[in-house]
Length: 149
Image (cartoon, rainbow, N blue to C red; front, side):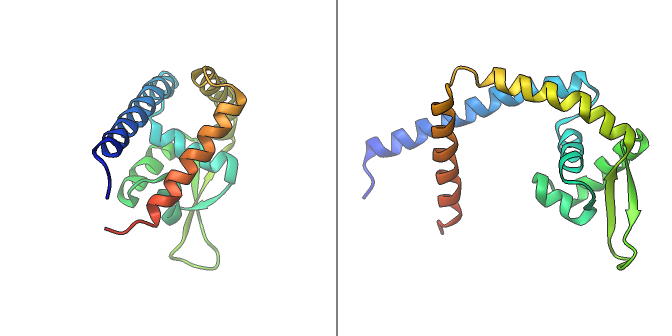
C-alpha cells in the first residue's frame, strides 16, 4: 500500500522534473529559433550529422516524432539545402535522408555552441551530481517501461 506522503512526493518529483525540462527546453528552443530552426528540424539534422544516412521511416522513432510530421520536416530541410533524399538501391520502398555539405557545415558551427549552452544550463550541478542524475533518471525511465496498467 502506498502512503499519502509517498504519493505527494511522487507528484512533487513529477512537477520538479517537468519544470526543469521546461526551463531547459525554453532556452534551447530559443537558441534553435535564433538559428533558423525549430526543435524537430534540429533533431533531424543532429541525427543525420552524428549518425549518418537514415531511412525516413526510422527517423521519427529515433527522434520521438510521429512519422507524418517527418515528411514535412524533411521537405523543409531539403528545400533549405541541408539534406537530400536518396533512394535505396536494393529496396524501392526505402528512401534515405542524408545530410548535405551545407547541412554538415551548418551543424559543425551550430552544434558546438549548443553543447556549450547545455553545459552552462546544467552548470549548477557538479560532475558527480550530473552522473547521479543521469543514473537516477535512466533507472526511472527504464522502470516505467516494465510497469503495466
